[in-house]
Image (tube, one colour):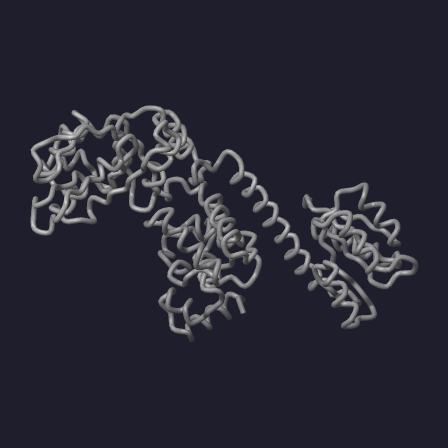
Length: 451
């Protein structure tokens, strides 16, 4: 039995009984009311998901019931029935919040489709509200979102290490959010009111990187027309984040080690040293231990940086975080753009669970932003997702769960249906994905009764 309860409101007792029998055969719980007054009394005393409401009734008519019902419970969905259709009444009903407007005699096939759609929308809204509560609750931490055990452990470690000035090494693939972790450590530390300086060690050639980090004096090299402090001096009493630390040249690694061990820097071309009080947080997507073994990285620097290591798992290893992340990004876009998207269609959620997300959270965010702009309804649907994602690595996606009695024909039928779903019914694209001609695909569609 379905958890949903549907109320039928019609002054004709026979229609109430007929609709109640139909609804119960469909698996729904059903109650009936023969007047508007009785319907509103039932609504205040029983939990109702959908009302099938006759428009023309003696006494309180359908539109008046609709107004009172929506005023009492804005979340209730109402499907209008009428034997006397008119454009004006349909427009008025929709304005007052009716979900749909059907004409008598009842087309039960059409009614079943409408109920399935409205209840699917209720399920989506319920999931979205749950996600929003989670996003506003314990699963958002310094701009990072996660409910997986691995991310909750990351959040816990950040809280612990932020109180101290110990060096931290953050590891993880590109796009996992290493800079956000570094920023969170700084924000929660006693140094939070001091500078947070970010350096991309792979973004500058060796000579420029040395000058940027440690500074230089006038005349140290061509173009050094005046003394310039380095980023370590600028970050004094604060935090410096060295991103892509695995790309730092060996010649600079010794200088960095000196800063870590003696808390002093020496500008390029200078003979004097300066004391600095800087916390160093480094990040890498490289295997530094392997680089040490290959003599491409200093062992002493590696151990000095690796005092505390925080590893951020790739998104494919914490897929339970994907729905939360999506809702978080959608909420952010609603604040920035104000388009009013509520969430993801269930088919999009299912697709996202099967994608590899090689670019991790950064890639997911970019896909959500693009889909948000393209969306034409209150939910992001498959057609809003780039085609490359809808057809990406279909062979890796579990389209079916074959049992002992599943035939090859049944497996093929389900596979074709899933590909059509992911290509939004575009037969040309589906044929290309399946490796079939359009004519062959059409024959199979007829064979399996899909058209």
